[in-house]
Length: 68
Ligand code: SF4
Image (cartoon, rainbow, N blue to C red; front, side, top):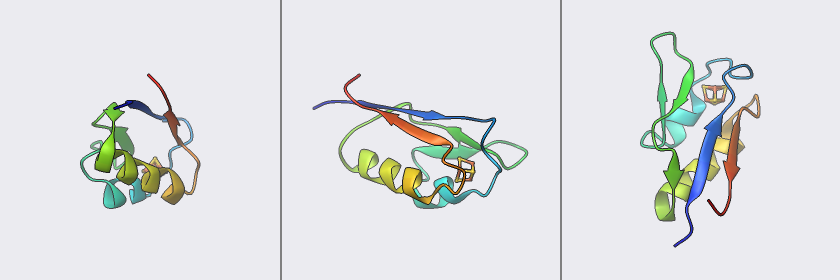
């Protein structure tokens, strides 16, 4: 199974927390409420949740890098 790398641009992140709500195993929140990546490589169901996080992020701060 191909893994996909998850990246989060902290310069873009405004701390809405939607990524964490949509995929709490893939994303977390730091002490200031900004998003961070907890699961750097995803596949299967975690990948599907990570995709929801990408779609749900209003700042387009999350990217998935396929084929790592
Ligand atoms: S949804 Fe986007 S802007 Fe909001 S915390 Fe997550 S990465 Fe940051």
